[in-house]
Length: 346
Ligand code: KG4
Ligand code: ZN
View 1 (tube, rainbow, N blue to C red):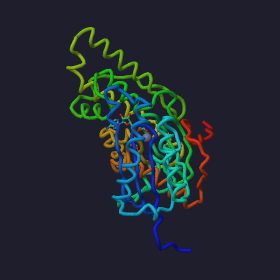
View 2: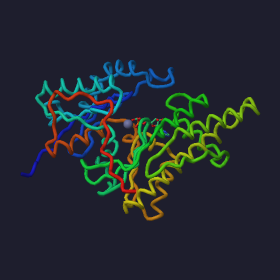
View 3: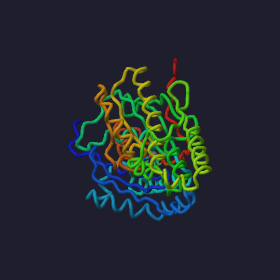
View 4: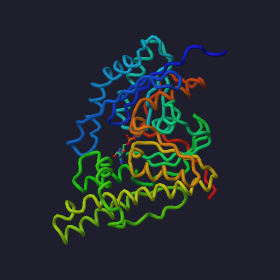
């Protein structure tokens, strides 16, 4: 039967340190509110206990603001989607408890979403721009993950390769910390890199089998470079900050794109998408976009859908809802919640 009324989904995101609520009408965005938590800045990283307490403070106002901006009454909603995992247990607990309470009070179906699938599915939100066709490969790059995902349908995705140690976002953030930059350091490295020479320093690229990644070595190489530099020149970091950032960023981007090219070749897929917080990086966006000159179809999400947000959780919820994949109130949040890994033959 043809539906005349759109399906309204409320999305809730609390996996780390951003409290998000969004409302979709079908695949169209009506509201996407994110309250970022500044309390972590002075600690140089996310403090889990502070994150969950701040989620508790932000949750109701953020949901209220999303419904207000969407101009719909909560009674019009068809389902509530929330991030079930992966993420910080205390943070996930706040979002899941809120979503359950809200769904139970309004007698709405509840949908637990995988945060990493959400990052990928942000590409399916109708933002007026072309969207990737299936199958596509998604390079998901965030503070906690680095993955190449084969996406065959909204609810059918498999991980082809992932990091064996640090995520690329961590490589950005930890290196930035060594430079004395504030947390999170990724955006600072991005800004400084724009003023530096990417050829100034060389960092070794790891040799990891298959489609997996490793970023812990480059972080160590970066640290050693700083030590060496400082032993010769006490204000080395201050003088060469932009060059260090540009060279580091260039190497990280090369590592990512070389593996993505390898995956594209192995799987014969030339439709490529970028997702996750690090896809906000301007160097990565430019390098990714330039692949279109080599015959690839490339898709980069709008800025607001790159870092953590609830619109991506709502769109994942929308597709789950279409397939009747709702859950009862008994599901516990999952700090670890891996997407299925492909059985590799090579
Ligand atoms: O997806 P996300 O918002 O949260 C996680 O699920 O991890 O990603 C956060 C990560 C952080 O490591 C942050 O430094 C990085 O994304 N990031 C960037 C930029 N903007 C955010 N890294 C490099 N350049 C940027 N412009
Ligand atoms: Zn994320």
